[in-house]
Length: 553
Image (cartoon, rainbow, N blue to C red; front, side, top):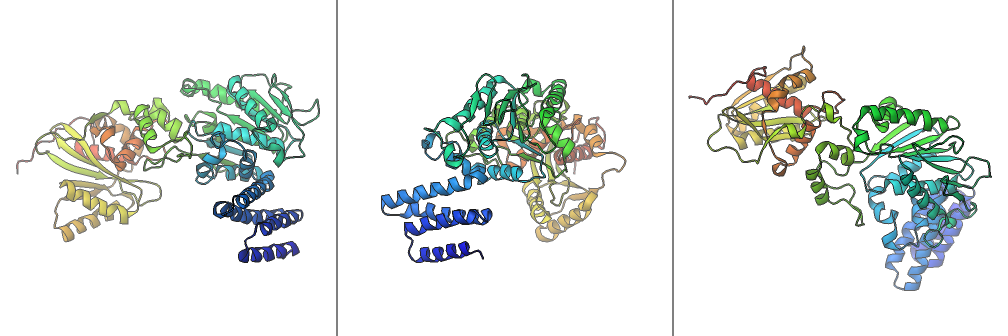
C-alpha cells in the first residue's frame, strides 16, 4: 500500500472515533496529493469522502459546520470533474439557483436510472470506441446535455478540434449561446473552478466558433447546421456530435429525403474529420429504418466499437422512466394522455424510440375494428383460444381468447407474457376456467405439444374441467410472414377492445400488433402470429368467411 494511502486509512480510523471537520479536510488534502501519483486511487477516496461530507451536511447541528461540509463537498466535485462528466455538471452549476439547475434535478433519473453521464464518459475514455448513438424522448434534456458536453470537451481538450452539427441555424445558435454561457458567465456557472488553467475562449457569433487555439487553426468547437457551408470553417480531430438531423415528421416519412440526408451526413459531415480515431456521438429520434441513426445501427450492429442506446419514455407497465424532480418531467398520467392523443406510430417513434415504417404496417390502428369491452347479449356460439407458446428468452407467450357471435369474433381477453412456463401455465389454466373456454389450440412447434398435454392434465386432474384441447404444428412450407399476410383480412374483421378498456397484457398485445410491418424488420411477431393461428382455426386456413353456427347438442 502506498504511504499516502496508509495515511488516509489512519485519518479514516480517526474520523470513525471523532468525526471532526478538520479530519475530513485533511483527508481531502492527502487524497489530492495521492492523485499526483495514482489518480484512480485518489478518485476512489474522493468518492468515499463525498459520501461522508454529504451525510455530515444533513446531520450537523451547527449551521457553520454544515456550511463547511457543504463547501468541502463542492471541492470533491471540483476535484473529480476533469475526469468525470457527471461531477463536471454538478460542479459548474453548484451556485446556480435550484430552479435554474439542469443536471441536479434530473440526475436521479438520467444518471441514477439510465447512467447517461457514465456511459458518455466510458465512451470518451475507451480508445477503441468510435460511435455512440443516443435516442431519448423529446423534452428530456438531451440537447442541454450536449451543451454541457461541449463545454466539458472545451475544458478537457482545449487544443483539439470538435464539431457540433444540427438540422438548422436556429438550433445551432441556441446551442452556441448555451455553451458560451457555461464557459464565460461566471455569475451563473463555475467553469473556471474546474479548468482554471484553460484560457478564456475566443468566440464568433457570426461563424459559431469557440476556440482556445491559435488564430488560423481550426476552432476548439465549431458549430454548424447541416445545410450550412463547412468548407474551410471547421474540422474535427476529437469529437463529432450530430443532434437531431431529421428536422420533422415530414422528412422522417420520406425515404427519399432520408436517403439524401444520410448521403449528406456521410459525404459532407464525416469527411470533415481528421484522422481515424475521431469519436462520433449521434443524437436523434428513431423514426424509421431509413433515418441516419437506424442506418448506422443496421450497418454496424455487432461491432464493439459502435454503441447504441435507446431510452423509452415508459417501461412495459406504463410507468415513467423520466419522472424528474423537476416540473419538466413525464408522469405516468402525462404519458397516458400522450399515448391516447397521438398516432400510435408517432408515439412509438417519438417516445418509445421504436422506428416504424408507417406505409408498411400490416395492422395500423385505424384499420382495425373496436368495441367497448361489453360483449353482445346472449350466449356466445363459441369461446376458444389459440396459443403461440414461448418459454421466455424475449419472445412472448401469446394467447388471444375469442368469443364468437354468429359472424362476429370478439378478442375479449389475451395472455401476452414473456415469462417462462412456470409463470404462463397457471395463467392459461386460470383463463380457461374464468371464461369457460370450450376449444383451445396450441402451436406444437418448440414444445407446444408438451405444453398442451400438461395444461390438459392440470385441468382434468386438479379442476375436473374437460374441454377440446389440441396442438398443431405450423406448416413448414409456409413462412410465418406468409401465414400472417394470408390471414390479415380475417384479423381485420375481428373486434378488439378499445384503448380505454385494456389491461396491461392486452395493451402490449395491441402495441405489437399495430406496429407489425410487412416491409420492415420486426423484433417480435407473437401477437399477429397468434391471431393468424386463431383465424386459421376459425376459417380452416382460408380467407373466405365461414359462419360458425350454434351447437345443437
